[in-house]
Length: 372
Image (cartoon, rainbow, N blue to C red):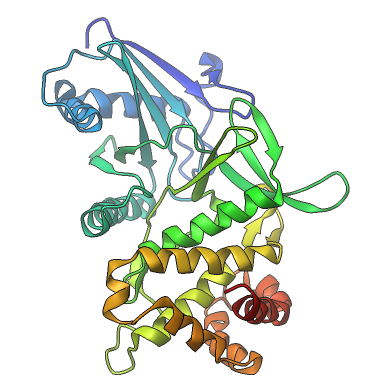
């Protein structure tokens, strides 16, 4: 690692902050073990430079899609990005052969986090092999070192979190957390497109045959991110940063009661609920997204279905499935959705779901009849 300069930064809404040498012994936020920033940065450095950087070089070559040899990085920038309940994500920026290459690095410290990260590595690999889609990070390699687990993965450059936030006039709107530039409120049109793409992504990864879906995910955790480019002709692109689980839901893995059509109805209804749940600024009071989120979710769901190759194995057309949905009365939709809502009863999200359920059913009923 001769001649390699290593810098340590902490991300903030106003821009990167160099790690303060006088604060390196402060504990990481949300870490029950009180691991210090000094230990955190040192462990990441050991992970990146282990085995004379051979695993890192392999990841760089895979990222650049090259087979030729490369020089040691001239510079490594390790940036603490955020702190979650399970992981402490960082970004890794490397200057190699005159090119800047960036990776994401999830760091797990607790036993629960370490087991979750190992599972996530396997899930990400499986989903990439199964679907070959670009919407979740590509995992490069995982290892355990210094009592921590590290997962080096693809970094979605220019993508940022978004959360519902309070406006000065007392309304609630989606806000983009554009680190380095500050935060800004999004228009309803931008928010609609974000929800639409998020629903499309989750539908694309839904397995119609086995009823498996990516879950858990939550807007409050910042699991979805978005990149918005342009001014008049805006380009909006959404990605999902995590795949912590991929299992069948609601007992549909029991082949005695399995029915792809009914399972797909439940998946859509589940999507319509989960898509609306957030927290103010990702941290505070649990909130419910505006009604247009339902329209966006249903639109994204059907766009995802139209792109799925396995959809035609079970349905003649999307129109056939639309007609099935339109055949349900409001009372029938309530009866169908109740088992889903019951699964939320032991969660903090349940009160706001229960409070808004009747109107939510009305939104779904209206969208199915007027917007499809």
